[in-house]
Image 1 (cartoon, helix red, strand yellow):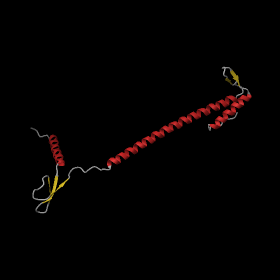
Image 2: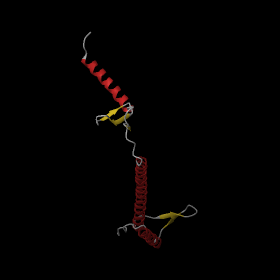
Image 3: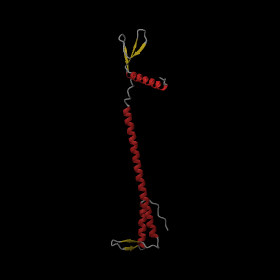
Length: 159
């Protein structure tokens, strides 16, 4: 039979791991012997006073659960704040686009009313065309300029 170093190392590590696990679960005792030396062992002596030691894992931090809950709440609060900010930003952008569109339409109406070469008309209740005369045009221009002012749009260029 050949000697295999890799398998020997693996079996040695497995054996050590078993001893470590067994020792981690064992109860540990501490006492002073007749010569005054401090002795540790897994069995308490019958002729000396021994102290039981807790060799296990230290108890968890009792405040850890509370701290985790607080951090979790803080993260949720920040995520909600980001979501609210994003929604507000989207709403503000949509409102700004709507306002810009209304300003552009109102400026276009003013340009159309000021153009003398074009016949401007609207439809009445019967569906017939009613053409604007000069007074109607001036009235429509004044209403449109008031709308621009109400929307806080820059004024339409004069021609």
